[in-house]
Length: 497
Image (tube, rainbow, N blue to C red):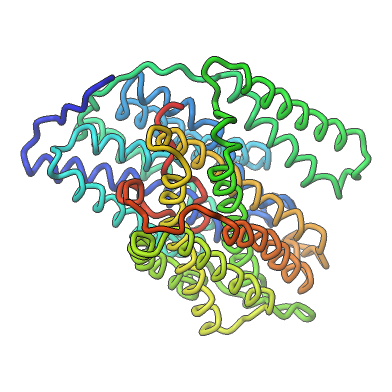
């Protein structure tokens, strides 16, 4: 077993290293929250009803790549891995900024997705190189930095989009990382920790692509026809790949996902419940920009015609409340049990889905709705890690967190895609010059209600849980940063399964 040996550093060097780690970790938030407000304009530019893929491809690609990334960080070093991922991210950002092809835009976003898990690797780097007594402070600083970027990101995106177009967001992301990379390489030391745990490459090659093929079949089924050969072939290929994945996981010497853990009555229930509750979070994050940025039009009552900057102002209570309620949720979990915290998150999200389906368009209404959603986000992520801890023996908590993290990322991508599918079935008009889609009131309402239905299943599962009822013992929630809405990538993903 490797032993942790912190790198000798002066206090000034520690501050400089921590600052760079925080600045680089913020890209995980920026690459999602800064792009969401740009989706309506991208839909116009690329003339597509499948714009939800621009959001979902990031987390799907990130979830698929995380085991490989974790393996690389263990074998070659966390800093070196982050730098390589940064270069891939820059290339993906530039591709997204210059392309006029929707397929290449998705390819660029998939390349950006490799940095979704940068926060978890950064946490490991902090624990490896920082003096023991400074680690808790450093981890807390990273949490604060990531949280602050969740508040600032939409405002920065709003200014860029309104003044320079949506491509400016991708150029900003490319320049941001490109400027940070050489400084990061000079200032941040490499982790001295190495391990050589095997990874299931065949499992990686069948899980993510299998899910993507199924989602493409579902998202295109209405356009191609549900019985069209192209739809059926993609669906059959996806199902076949997932069946092969399950078969292989039962036989692989080092499986990507230990099915014995996943199918355990406590852990499996937790993963499914969190995924269903998280579905509502992802749906809300996609629907609000579409609603509020749709131009005011006769026959559409939800349209507010907001600019991207105004959208950030109207919805900023979400990020602020999520930052505040994350620690509160952790404290409540320690005293009353994580199950109650997750149940509260589910109830709050159900309220958000119901209120969202009422198609509110006044600023004070959106502010209240965003604050409720922010509280739900904070409670969701402060309860998840504790429930994973409680569902498994201590010796399996690490692998459990990894599996839970991967499935949270996959569930977020699936939720975004399926919400887009619901909307695409309710297009009332397409702009003659902008080619942008206008969705009916019933379409937006149905998307919220479908998400609420999925979330209700999650709440019912949480209510049935037998674990998580006692005070949480602490652990993961003290070492993991809170996630923000539209960032379903769980920060608990391990460094090599």
